Image 1 (cartoon, rainbow, N blue to C red):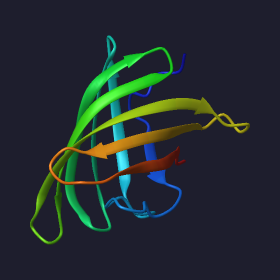
Image 2 (image 1 turned 120 degrees about the horizontal axis):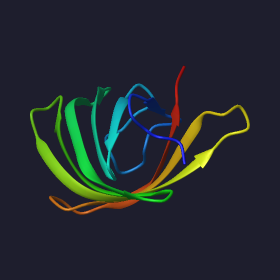
Image 3 (image 1 turned 120 degrees about the vertical axis):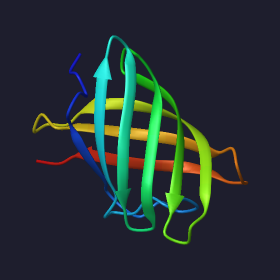
Image 4 (image 1 turned 30 degrees about the vertical axis):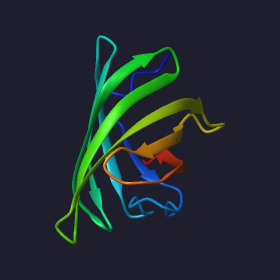
Length: 111
């Protein structure tokens, strides 16, 4: 099980119904089953996520500030996959908690 600590990810495409775009970059941290990350880019000025990891599943809450000055929060469950080239991919099922909407997004490790 590969650690996410220090790994950087970007969305593979703009997220329909969400604010994550292909230009949004995430930096993940991991310690003792705890997961947290900072992210920004595109429509997002600043975002944070915090949660837990069990095997290849992440379960976290996120909060973010968009470029329009609005804050939003939500819940996400992600599945970790290893790509053929060794990079990691996170397939995410997310749902807003501060407004209506839900969807799926994919982020892949960069570098």
